[in-house]
Length: 339
Image (cartoon, rainbow, N blue to C red; front, side, top):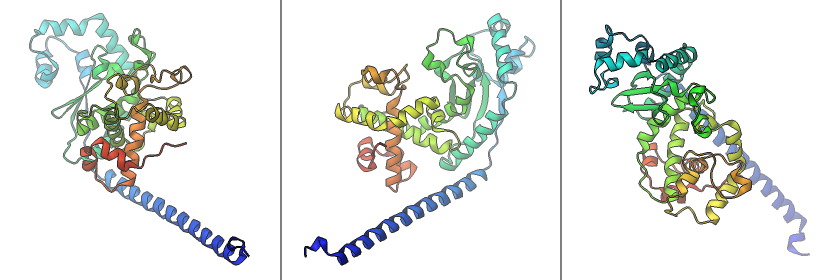
């Protein structure tokens, strides 16, 4: 009788196979439980971290500016008053009809910022847990003539937030600004933008000119942001709508195959960055059936996936992640796109 027909052998093989499957299931369950236990422990430690958050409403103070209180305001906020302008400029600006309308719109939208204060409190607890050298900053809210390129600025212990860039994507102040930029002018992205500013400082400038190097750098930022904002949805962390994020998840394998098949990873073609990594109306695959649906910055999404896989499959610290080069991260990530 042929060996493979031996019933006793087949029974033993079946039993061994079932035992192996059961062992793997138990091992997987143990890993999940261990991971959940570790996450729960970290969460309890973070909640105990003392943080003091005070939001100074300079926007409201400027709305009430007078020639009499201007000297005190300049003394308290010297970083917001350029010395090249005399006092009359500031007084006239505070009474300008456009500024008065801005003040009214800000007051309507942000009369209560308690939710943002709570979110900032949690954010800085997480920042101090992972980066204890960072202290909570002095937080100041301003209006900035809709300077959307500087919605959030951090510098020397200061965090300055421009409230007039978070009035809602359809606000009439934003007429003439591209739709893909206005999408993120919602207040729900404010604290996410603050987190982005801090993680960019941690990761530092991109030095690797390859497409992969840029992917990984953005991936590092999003991985850190994920740690700092665990209660935020992934779409919110990326500045995507839920529909855009769902598209990215559903097409991850096809996106990755496109990058690999066209040998883009080690390319230094600078045109790849605005096509797949920078804000735009969509990611530019130059495929009609895809470009109509693909959200911008799709390369950042892939970079996030690669870095997450790297951290899952390697026992490294955050500092080691930040310092690791892109090729090392990619080669040891064992990244496999979801099908």
